[in-house]
Picture 1 (cartoon, rainbow, N blue to C red):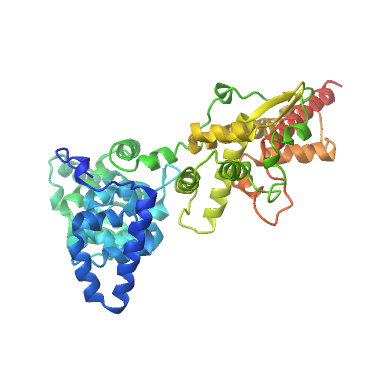
Picture 2: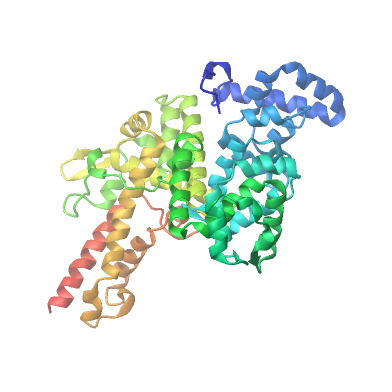
Length: 485
């Protein structure tokens, strides 16, 4: 985090050019390879680079490679504290918190605050299991190192975590009076009782490391209403995420917000206007014969753009990077275990499928009266003019609209009032299966599964989504007929 009087030009670019980043990573690999045979020579070469070059290279590395690079420094504290919070946070998640304890030791209070603002929460709510895990990690640091780390923790979050586990062991009125008179230093952990072993050890640890912080936590636990502490915790976190901490995470939490598809000129085709077969007919021969039936349209458009010369290699590379960044954002804000490597392909597929739906919908061109097809040229133009995040949100909004209509139909009170079978069994099998499939797409994981290898499920595409919308409309009409009769 730059000081107010420090120019951004004085620091290496936190988002270096991709090609330059690749060159930096190669040079780092060479120096790390030298460290395997001659550690001292590698450390001397590292020091000769100078701080700015060391930091610039660090920004091009991640995970274990970044960790090994930082360990070449005689004192990695300054380098670690110069890293952007998100870069450090991602590195620690990739390395594993236990193996990255020396990075946590070197982190500043502000970096710790920003990391715990993420790690303490799941889908925007305080996650007590995560808080417990980080308390265990912090207690592995020595007292001086932990004191710096504790200064970065949100005292409201600590109080909310401990509220369920501890209670005053002395007269509450006397305790409130002492707190009111600012005599909190008279109290010790013995004045609180708990049956939770970790909470007991943490109270003792907190008291020994930072009595001011212990007094603040005690005051919030005893003298403040739970609702006030909770509101302060969430309000403070949101402000920090946006203004000082993790702008990407703040965006990630709003990644699944719905957008207005009609603002992009997208209209749902009517059954009388076109058929799914016509919609699938490509407007150019280069788009025919896809490599795999379950390959998202986005990948075909990128391949066509490169083959035709309409897209440069750098543009394609940028979209690949954006796809990975969006997948990480999806995991970061909308899963309980973003570090699970098994989740990453799933998130990436969801990004590709949903962006493809939007791209196909935006790339429809009228080629004959009553028929539409996909224009690959138009698709590539859309890729040039729109961010992938925008395509993803648009695809999600279109899919969610159909899924929500299917869910509302399945929950319609008229079904039970008319004595119809549960689970839409009163519909013809094919129609029922389509409506149930549409309802499944309330989940982005189910959307990703439609593109997974080795599945019989149809890939969710724009034509398929239109089919499902028509199916939901037919099922709704069938319900009206059933209930009116």
